[in-house]
Image (cartoon, rainbow, N blue to C red; front, side):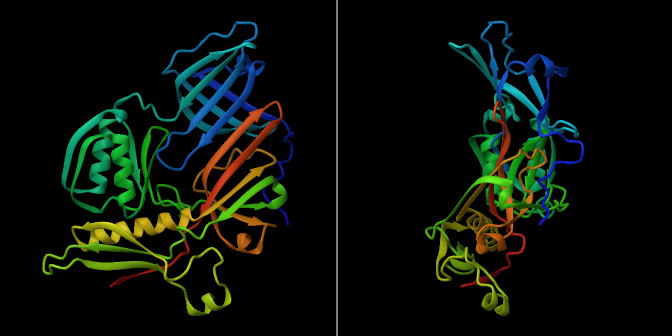
Length: 363
């Protein structure tokens, strides 16, 4: 099978990169001093992090100040480098002997307005209006996945809570994930393999021999097949319930039972009693989508770094166990590491939920 791992014609098996500090190209200055480069790219609100370790044995490295911006491009010699974004330096560390300087930079400046605790109430708003208000407050653009902006929020309080924490909570309540990428606040539906604009991301095929190590774990604990939520019906003193559960076509279930699924009677019950049916339904669906992705751990260490991989990229694998190969996967976290040993990439994968059908029933 031909996979996408072979390097393009003309590319050399030698990593390459470009670094800019405050828009000034410092690649050659760093090249003979760089001990290691590690880039961690997250799907959610956790900031992407860039860590640079520099040799300072001669004591000549000038320590940059915090809040300066580093831009990184990464790839292989002989092909175009991939822009990996901008990162704000928030930690500077020096140690020895031998002396070395470590710079830690993040994609979000959490020292700014995003990390100030606030008291604020949002009443009779849509999710899009709330996200837009917070984005404007933090001088960010914003994009919401299709279907999220119109969700009605009757009332929600932000009490001594940072915008970062509140956005994470707001996203979780509505089956989304919040992230900041390239100075834009994004609200995405995780696990669908789509960009914030709703465009499908092309799947990537990996064979087992593309990597030198892998790890797979399936735990039955927490491997629920549904979620039950309650809401208070104003016409009925007794709380009402609904259940969100996986739904299969009978023929598919008989021919291709899903090895990754738990027992059909293992249903998670949310402890909160919601104000209305719509809120209960959104909470149940959001929890159900997180459960689908959280019961399985699967990671692959790729022998050659893949700079074009990023979170939300759909992955198909070949050459593992049949149950693993049959499943559709999606990238959760990517870690790029460049050092004296070469350039490698580790990917952590979640179950792709795009094809998972579910039924909502009142119980």
